[in-house]
Length: 312
Image 1 (cartoon, rainbow, N blue to C red):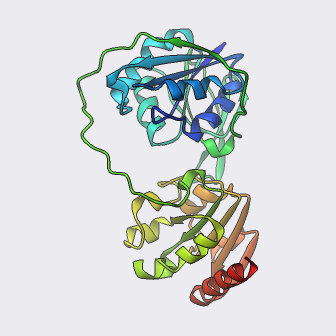
Image 2 (tube, rainbow, N blue to C red):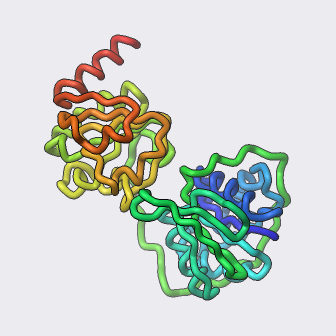
């Protein structure tokens, strides 16, 4: 059996999600290949070749792949699909855009956001906002899978796999890249951060949200938000953590003014250490917290920030 991993990259470097996806693929098949579809993406291909367990890197290098348009990348995956029993992509916006197109064209059922590989045809995935785990067995000849990357360790470095060119398919012509707006930030990327300070509706306003910045600065942390805070306009959409936002599993997660709705818990409950600050002692967030502080966040957060500053 052989598995194909669809690498997520920016043509220069691999995204961390690709390393977790390779780990899942190694549990599915005896041989793992990685597809790097991009333009002038030799550096990303070299990074893929250096992943332990990867035996082959297929490089589709052409202008139509430069911006990762799902229609074009999915067509490239389909051109290679015949040789694989498993096709895996990270459960990120990138992977979720490509995998369903591949599954639909192959007429197979996609297996979404797996958290464990029991056997090559049996997988576990969360349902009901993570309150239950479904065991899914697939009889499809090709398993198209998205991987919840926080559930798998990142693959280690290896000795170097063979890098081979793949015949690039033509662009679909159904979509075109227009522009990309990237928010500049000195903070870590949310899904890769080791420490996250997240705020909820209890913070009260967008201006009050700024009080999290000194605390995050002291910890070298990313800043996140609950959906309630995002919907209220306190924080931007790309900060949202939860079932309909980003899934994170940092070493330390500090929840400030977050009640702990199950949709939010689904996105952060795998964090190694969870600290909750909330004035309501009955808030559900305390059920998953390793440490809880019952108090007024407008007093607790400045005190905590000050203590960290003095410790420096």
